Length: 100
Image (cartoon, rainbow, N blue to C red; front, side, top):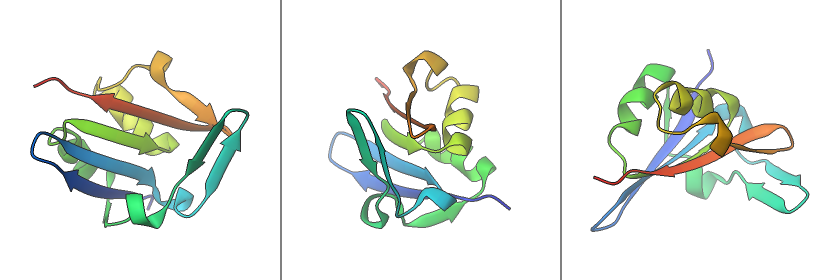
């Protein structure tokens, strides 16, 4: 079963959700001008399945996503569009913010 790491960060005005496909944790992705460290400190807190991620995305105001599974779920739910996804070493990465 494929799982996804999630971690919430809360400030008085925002709730940020960091999301990474499980197999990417600990990797450093580099491609041209982009460098993304999929660090345990930022992404690793709770391991979830796809359905739980769908619920968690509805609870955040900002999200940072890295990985094919989590980015495709965010696209499916229309939090992001395919045109706003960047690829680093072929791995999709996207961010969004919601104005509530």
